Image 1 (cartoon, rainbow, N blue to C red):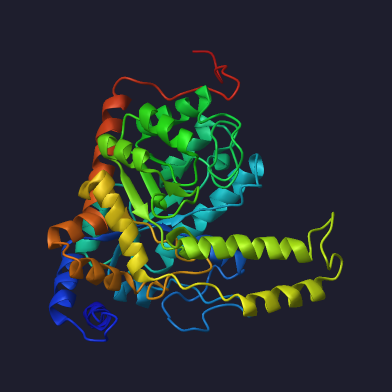
Image 2: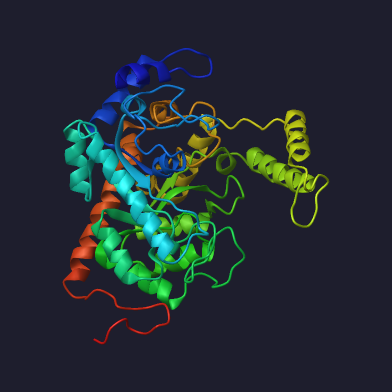
Length: 424
């Protein structure tokens, strides 16, 4: 199945296929697990009230009425050559306190249930060695990523227990600040990390949990890299030099990532890939507010039907620009140029975004992206590094740091107010 899909993906814009490139990519994916750093399927299943949706079937109707089709299912993961998947256990940034901890545990439960339901396809993985073994056995390694520091409720103990349940990275913030780190998409309040935030990074290093810097502010990025004894990751981010969006990674930070031996995994979301799409999103948001911005105003405030009709008319007059697979390849190549081949990976954000570039609409399309890079001159070794080799290295180095730190350091009892949780 995978080889057939890859052969079909080997067609450039001219429509002419290149079987040689398809064969090269197929071999890379057979030899090296393709590890996607970020997929939001667990939340999508929860939001649809369909945690037990049949993922062994692939069809456009694999969704609830009124919702967009899923981008992820088992047949398409197989066709895309996926070897390892970090499932994001995202929860809304507005959910905090004990409720955030409970919701996160419920998300982790979804991931573990998926692996238990489809044991011939998935197996939970906790180490780089696990990923390679599972890939050799013809299955897909399932890993867990926590997408927001608010999910631990300022508790080192909760952080440790989530690691014990399988979480292998944590994004320090999502769209809002935590009590100890600034987000990229809110006005700064900490100017980076607080002392407790740096202590969280230290405890993550001691555990072997990767520090994920997607969603955080540039100051948080810089301070986190300086604080971390292990390589950091960006699970789903892009090059800010190509599109000036706060979710992108500035070039000076890319150089820090290279020095840190970390990794930036490129996001497929159209508005992070294309400047035209980002501008269109901003214009649409402005129009939406102009039509209906409760409780303060809007042309059609209190008239949702008229507001919706007006926005639909605006969208018809101003169709969204089309992002392309080639633009994603441009971001990958820029990160490679700025940080080196050892510091770039793939973090699609499938099922966590509404629009993806043409040719990258679901998990079966990774080969098309790799074929485009091969067409641009990437060697098989470079492709192998991108798809999984770099992530495996980062994990192994973080595991080695954890082993060293655990030999000399006790679990942190630090609290947000700077006082120990219990007397030493």
